[in-house]
Length: 465
Image (cartoon, rainbow, N blue to C red; front, side, top):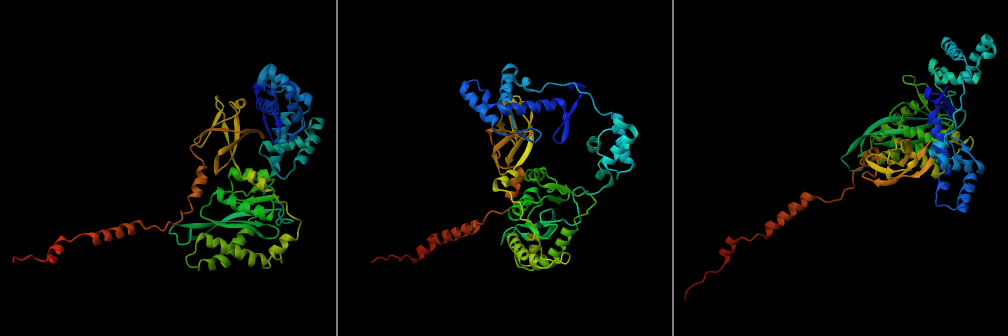
């Protein structure tokens, strides 16, 4: 099977066409030798760059960190000089399929017949029938995963949720949103919004690791709550969420992947595992919101200050009816949590998108135009940026950084969704009453008006002598 007929290779987590894999490998090699390929470099300068490249780890497209020897890097440089980018692509090898496709089809039939069968059991059945021709258990598992025939796909079980109760603190966090009362955005403001409470609950201890009322149900608002929870309570192993728009965003998935958090979504119509946070929301309504709404002129900042005080002074210190322990004490009874550094958190909550590089080595992002490395022309790259600062954009290809893009035309400095969030807060009052000023000026002008009739009446009459 050759490249033109759609041969697939497996690298990382998914199989890709051979042609795409060869391009990714060539881009990775170019990223390693790029600095040493400059024609103006002297042999001594080039040698120093090659030694430096050979002495550090490089991010491979499959996600691994790899170290390349100096002889390998020298060979890639010679290939680049001789044939350019095409010469950096790996050679095509003619390799036929090792497993009979009919046996893989039979494996799928066995799984459909009894979804409870494991991949190892299906491989054992095939081995009993077909002998040495049967594929290995790992081959069967990979085929069933690619064909959408996982046990969870057929039985509907929640993947990754594990036990009904997590074994230890920070093993599983559950997040959801609650629609609260309508409040003013600021004290004394006429602008009012429905308060949305984003809450994150530790499944083992029932500790509310993060909670905040927001004026909108967006991914940016959720990220603010999650980032505060990660900073104060550590990094969980898993985060279990529903399929609402803020929880299904690519930005949340990328942040979790960066921090090593396994993101698990509940299946639509199957809310198993969400009972604890629903019970927390019931407590929040019955014990907190019912009292908070009695506060006169309640604003969103007031609501958040009261919420934090209630969580720390009441909820976390009260014995939980199911665990028999106080959430704060149960959370701290386990191992010390794993914390992410400030730089790791900043990098994790950057946004990213994919763009195709034009023939003139430029990309566009929300009306802005940037110049990228010419070697990426015609390729689909990943742009990584802060949604509140579009002036700086990093260009990546399968985990390999190609530096910052050069801004050519910047018409928008903030992502449209970030700009909408910025405008949620009303501008501070200036204290200027324009109409009152006009009225006062009008009154002053009337007082200064001259009454000529009164002047004539008060003028003494002259008499003849």
